[in-house]
Length: 296
Image (cartoon, rainbow, N blue to C red):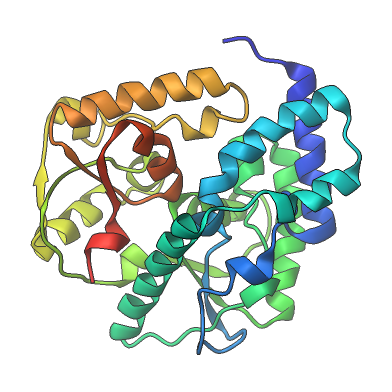
């Protein structure tokens, strides 16, 4: 794999600058992406936090394609700003993400939990900086993000995807970040049905040690999981290819295709729990679902 260092530097500068200026990695229509929620209190000591991951997962590849053009053509910033109106998910993608977030909210509420939502003021987590290895920029943005939450009295954050969960939990390794972070899968019990092979999020299973807990909850839910140690074992499951996409689209797609083929050798029905895994594997899998689409 050939790594273009100048392209990576440009990408780092763009993302860092956007985050420090607007709390977003690139221009987003936050009113649209927060419109899934209604009736939740604005703010609160405990909040549900999407970081827009489910809502924008369908358009990330278009931004990944845009980054090299920005690097080559040195596009003016106003064109980047206009991209929030030009690059949007289609209605089916958006409705799917909204239904997932509504179902997660319903499951949390059913557990007796009370929480608010920041709506269109919600900031991005900084996961792109951490996962791209831009640690100094990740730390600086983390300080800004921490102050944002503290000014609003936030003491606990409920996350809905692995990348956001990992990014927020890792801040404690670098800066003062005394906000309690819980992923919704740690808080809810659910019921479901069907037979699937599970594609584990690398972050859930390895970085955060949630593999056994998630497996136990899925087993108790009524869902039947097809297992093959070489494909789905805690130490054997492999990446969907998504985190590599900003550096190399081809290598990312090769990894996604290979992972999909291994999963389909176990079961034609694939279950994921990450919006990026869904986007990267879905071109190669006919029946793929997010766990929040099949449980309640």
